[in-house]
Image 1: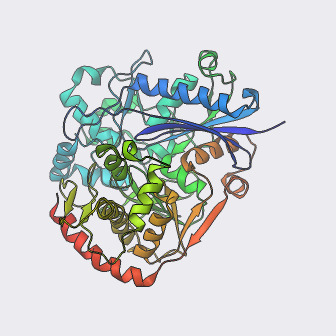
Image 2: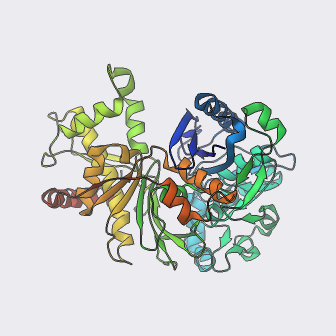
Image 3: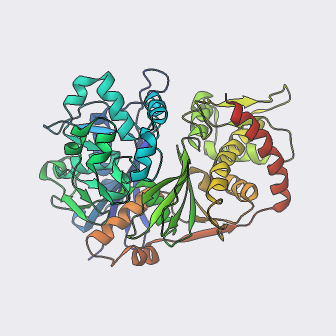
Amino acid sequence: MSAYFMGLDNGGTAVKCVIFDDRGCEIAEASVKTPVLSPRVHFEERDMGELWEANVTVISACIQKSGVDPSDILGIGCTGHGKGLYLVDSAGTPAYYGIPSTDARAESVIEAWEASGVSDGLMEMTLHRPVACQPLPLLAWLKENEPEAYTRIRYIFEAKDYIRFCLTGEAYAEITDYSGSGLMDLVRQDFNPRICEAVGMPELYSKLPPLRNSYDICGRVTPEVAEMTGLRAGTPVSGGMFDIDACALASGAISSGDLCSITGTWSINEYVSDHPVVHATTKNSLFCVPGYYLVEESSATSAGNLEWFIHLFGLRETCKEGSVYERINTLVNGISSTENTPVYVPFLYGTNESGRSLAALEGLSHAHTVGHILRAVYEGVVFSHYTHILRLLENRDPPAAIKLAGGAARSRVWVQMFADVCGLPVETVEVNELGTLGAAMSAAVAVGHYRDYHEAAERMVSRGELILPNMENHGIYMEKYQRYAVVARKGG
């Protein structure tokens, strides 16, 4: 019997479904963009009903494209962006708009908690300082500003846990996602009512679903969903995992010390550790491999900036032949690292500096071309990652190589830039959709096809090329980084 596993990834801008065989080979893929509403500055929302419909669409399309018999799909795993907020009421229907992780409406809540010392008390339990896009401050904002919606809450979900609930009708909180949510005590490795009490919302504790591991079976596809999607009713659905775990796992970052950078909407920079690292800007969450943590530095400052640029300036419409990304790589590669490019600070959706800094493009002249500006975007994204990596390296030795995942990992030009800026080798993997692969690996372990994640990684991860840094370019980029750092600190 053939063995296939499905991975679903609900990211910040798209829903993706991929069917893999048990060697990690991609059989078929389907994806759709998911609209994000921006009713005002710092607010990001999505229609949760439309989000579920998008998942139904990609599941159905992926099965049809694959030609795989649904009975040969042995399990399904879900992943998605962490943080944000997805709420359902007692009828199982959305209690409010879904809020993705690029939302910053709760920044005033964080400021109040910092001033009052609440953040210090939370950090003792969560092992990281709260940030505005986490469920806990978003719920505090909701209670104050949308009390009617707040009173309807039955379950507090993260993105992928909501989708798993839709697939199975069963409510669970998967441990890797919730450990980064601000709702979970990482010392006890469990929910703690003291967290809810500390922010004056003790009633929230009863709204938290039961905790499960990423490799637990957390329900099965319902007959109704099977009819809608073409899946086999009763197909097991694993707990799945936080997308930063999924990408780390699928890139082979599974052992203590492995460092991974993920280039999506968020700049995720993390390493696997056998102990947490408590630092002002560092986040800790529980890794999908028991006994380990992910030590994370992150901000919403990565490759999503390029997507914004492409959309704003209509680059897809003006690209006459081939891929728009191939055209952009050609333009960027045509500008030398020694040229005087503008400085781009990628703070469209967030910042890794203090305050509420916005994006900036500084140092433009009449001689600059689209290629110069695109190179500035590439460099700005890498510099933002580098800021986080430097903070991580304050607490550990440099890795043998950085494992790079996400959109930038598909661009040889961008990968080389990462290596040159960081002064370290960069390793990619031979799969396009790492998040979905990590999710599929959780399903393979959940149903017992593989013993654990180490065996799943041995069988399903295919490592790609190792890109070495050009140290002459590293020196040039360090001068550019100093200029970038000045602009980033003063804000857009």
